[in-house]
Image (cartoon, helix red, strand yellow):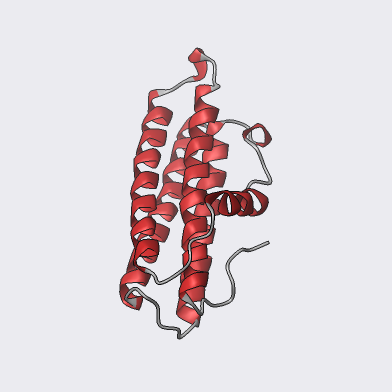
Length: 164
């Protein structure tokens, strides 16, 4: 079930979707970190640790960018717990134990985030509404984040391939 509408028509709707992106970034980052920390010492790996560290830094930057956009909108904020519950319902249907290894879990998170941003870019592009932020600036940020998530998918896939 997608939480992204066919198009985005208001600041309130856009703010809600951006808040979902913020929480999604937090969930993906925290989940990968927890999964990695749960590995026995002999299964930990410098390359995986570097990948997760870079992903964590990227996620923090994405959250900062999304928070700036939300702050610039003329919209009512949705309570964090409500957004968190929505993300859990929509994107939390699987747990780390559902994947064979931390890399598969990370790949799932990166793919989920990519799909969310891809749908969000499409929804903003499909509408003609004016927002409290510059439309081109909004799309530039969302496309940049989407691109970074696509690169994350590729990085995880390459690391998985090198280990096969």
